[in-house]
Length: 329
Image (cartoon, rainbow, N blue to C red; front, side):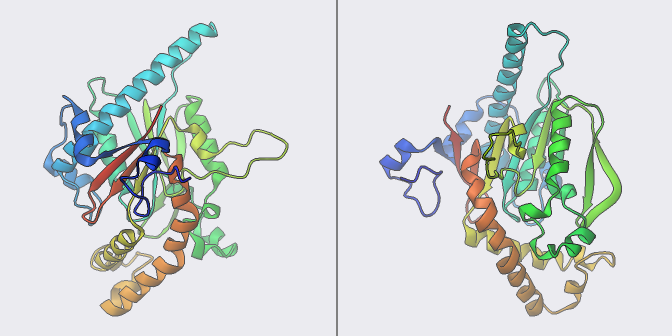
């Protein structure tokens, strides 16, 4: 029996599926009521600045979805801090600083992960306690293009094997250990490569948002039972941004075509050649990139991680969230 979260292929009204599902499922309208008295601390111009290209999120969507999510995350952070204090008393520990609460955000390309991450960062940082909230994406942990070319992996950029997983694990381990000024490598979407010797310093935040398409990846378990960490082991809460495959396809191609009129026109852009060809040829390129790279990655690696998330935001055709699935306790 399929107990995965609801999808387009699963009947939303099947009581058997709902009963055995590990998730509570809410419509956007039902979810919006959970915001209670959570204040709206963002303004319209700030939301416009935070959203990605072609993402229509506005203040109404923040009210509908993200205020409730902010309130939920606040309760999880508070519960984590309480458990930390109780465990210290149980172990008779003192002078041990609380480590950052880490939120993982996963999902396909073009589905709106970056917008969600930036909106949450701003909302969480404006809680009354004024926590320090940092945001890091996995792009900087991709192997440099020179390595990908040498290993014949440029056509699999974004697939799990294209990342320096060891570097990700070392980074998250240092964050959880409470180390100061942990370095996260930086990435340029303009040059489509890791920036050599450029880093973002993460200095003991209260909350870290870690966003990337494959952050919920698991791995084969060792036969000898030795400890083999995976990235999501370090997460205190995880979110998956979901949508129908065909809809993500449409968003990806639309974004590619818009980038031809903006970022691709920069002389330093890795994709500058696509700004010079006609629209039909550019669309054919976008379709090829989707079919041969992004769709394969979505089916083989990204969608299979969806049931591992604590919360799933499922978007509709207008790029706005239609349902929210929250894992049962």
